[in-house]
Image (cartoon, rainbow over all chains, first blue to last red; front, side):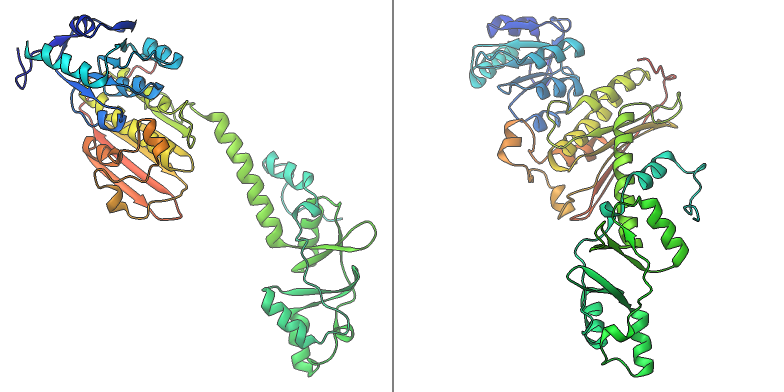
Length: 119
Length: 311
């Protein structure tokens, strides 16, 4: 079922398409995801009124996982091949947030996700 | 000697401990305005007025000869001696305190003599300060403030009320990005244990987190409190400063006073307060520049079950 012309995708498909490293698998990777938010300002993520979204960011701090938990996001994708800080991994483990890392930059990561959504 | 005018059995230990631990020299004013014996009473009246004080010790080379108070000036006007020198009219029967005496002793003296001030001498009988009730009040208030702060820190995240009605208080420290968000995570856990729908949990979590981050980024530290009572969730962020210059502007989307460093950490986009307002059923912001800021967010819920405090 599509929403706003976008097909649901799963974290599993994102992992394949973006060549992601799974840093922490927090939940079901086959859950349907309709919403994706990209950017480094968590304040902007906090205003997105969608549950179960994926956050694509180059920001590598604990607050990214905290924000993901607060908005009940399904996962976080770190771009530019960044390895998450230790605190981020610990937080992802305790909050059940899936944490991924992709070698792609922010723009390319978004383009590929967009292609997945078009189907 | 008469005992101190507060009960040593019923008073809190912290107060008693303070008035016995503090010495007169810890509390007194050391910059003492003094006059000389040959100064005229008229000149001393001007000194009293200019310095906003009610008494001036008459001293030369740290040696204390007497004291001239407002009462002495009144008398001088009555008797027509205002132009005469201090030595003739000063009070010479002086009651003094020593700088090494405990504060409790000074309090006893104020109770016993009803003077507005006592000159303070050191062991060599030199004038080293002056002590007033105001000095004592200020020292005690500051001391109590410090003790309360310690107490508040020690109760940190403990439940603030009886079990059953979830209530929590968290102290949030300025620029403590390491712990920023912990309070909101706790609040979210608590809400999950209350069997609420995911939308309500999300709205409350967002309000709590935005307010917590505001305390970290903008305040001089503050308190985040949460309560759930009668199907109403209340989240309050309260700080003691620095206050908001223009609250209307602060509620304008995109307006932020955060610096680049804070933005590099992912915050300060100028959307926080508005976002709290968006998720709240009722929103209240009070602030004054130089004072504190209080933000209150109310979210109404429809009960779906009881609370499980262990959640």
